[in-house]
Each structure stands twice: as C-alpha cells, then as structure tokens.
Amino acid sequence: MTLMSAQLSQYNRTAVLSASPAQLLTMLYDRLLLDLARAERAQHNQDWNAASEQLLHAQAIIAELQSSLKVDEWDGGPGLFALYTYLNTAMIRSNVNRNVSLTTECITLLEPLRQSWLDAAELLAETAPVISRSATGGWGVG
Image 1: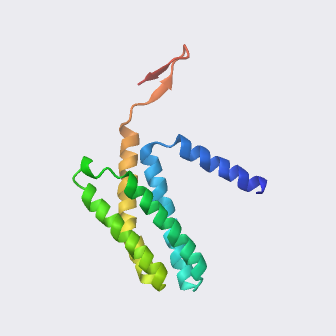
Image 2 (image 1 turned 180 degrees about the vertical axis):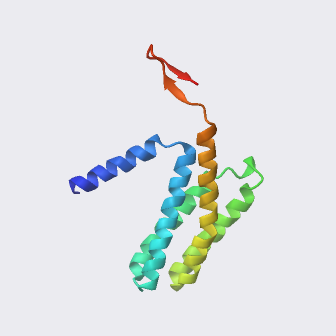
Image 3 (image 1 turned 90 degrees about the vertical axis):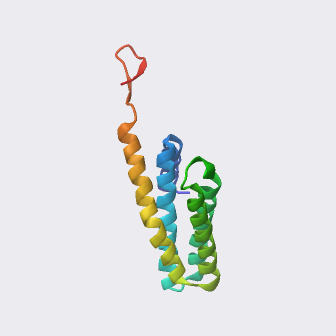
C-alpha cells in the first residue's frame, strides 16, 4: 500500500467513525450509486468481471441497508424493505444475465431516494443543537 492510499484509507476510516447515523446512511447511498455507475459502465464495455465485482459490492450495501432497517418503526418501512428486496433481485439478474438495463433501472430507482435521505440529513443537521466548548473548557448545548 502506498503512502497516499494509506492516508486515504485512514481519512475514510476517520470520516466513517465520526459520521452521524444520517451521514452514514447518505455515505452508503453515495457508494451504492457509485458501484452501480461503475457496473453500468463496465457492462457497456463488456468488462463482465468488473461489472460483477461492482454489482456484488452494491448487493452487500443493499443487504446492510435492509438488515439495519427498522421496518416497524415507520409507515414507509415495509415499502422500503420491499424496494431493497427488488433491487437486490434486479442486481443479481443484471449480473447473471449481463443486463445493463437492470443496472440502469436500479440507478433510476435509487437516485431520488438518495436525494431524499440527503435532504433529510441536511435538515437534521440544521435543526440539531450546536455543541460548543465554553470559555471555562466545559461543553454545552447552545
């Protein structure tokens, strides 16, 4: 591992460890869409190994999102769970059948959802109390 890649790895690790739950969710969506875009590009180039690798990573992210979803805690939970199930199946079919249109469909379905989560995370950040250090060295909410 080069120094640059080691530093990037450390930076990414720190970003994940210091992220709020809302930020982590948007980071997962960002990576999911990056994986799908890379898979789509690889499929267009008929680089099936690269496409498969990206689709498998995207499926792992969907599995993580699905396993962390608390379906019973909000009305949209069952629908989102069903969407994740559909996306996982579409990615498997896209990979097995080398079907770029299914990869494109996954991207199309996920982009507005990612934007909604991003908007919600930004709204949360705007309404969250600001924690600051006082002149005496203590921490307070203001």
